[in-house]
Image 1 (tube, rainbow, N blue to C red):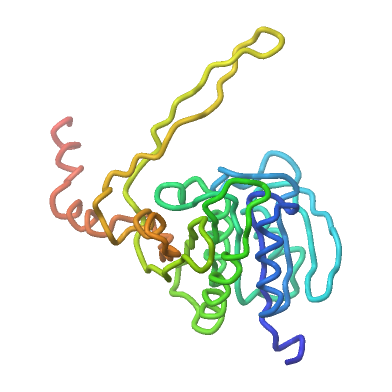
Image 2 (cartoon, rainbow, N blue to C red):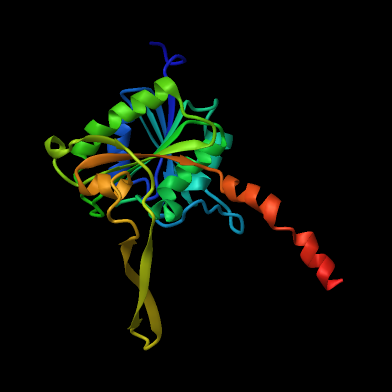
Length: 267
């Protein structure tokens, strides 16, 4: 296969260009196509789809390897995809993959995740995009199982693509590869983070706050969710649709919510 025929795969993340997870993802991707890595210079966890607009964004060419080019960006994961499209790549990539995140991005975490933010940005450009995560926050997490189980997903999306405005959010439990039961096609779990702020005092005697808390699963009995899949040893694959419109309620609003009537009452 010639270079021009090989798929062009854009890789990013939110843990930073030196994270072990992105190195593992590149190992898989470079077997399937030409890889360009454009990732944050530093960790950008929890940045969601934020972009940098008030300060300059800096782009640094890091190194060249066989079949892989590495670039670091001073901004967010979404910044990375944007600057890759306009300043790094010479053509539209065939795939955007983000991760492998150190830690879960299941349930409501999909809203906060910079890993998913990069995948969403790719989707907005009309590029099939996937966010990958492993349920292990350790900097030295073992990505052996993730590489094995994520590769078929990348191959399938390269072959079949994804629907308009749709990306995949893929999470894998932190268990040995041989104990994983398979893939679960599932939905996002309804839940929320119950947050608390731990008050501390710095060496100068000033107060500061450290975010803590725990995840609250609002439907623990459901068996079609990503949280259930992960708890039961499956790779959770969720198709995420980037459309914030509640279409069913929109139709109800059109029929029942007459704002002009309320306006007429005031007049």
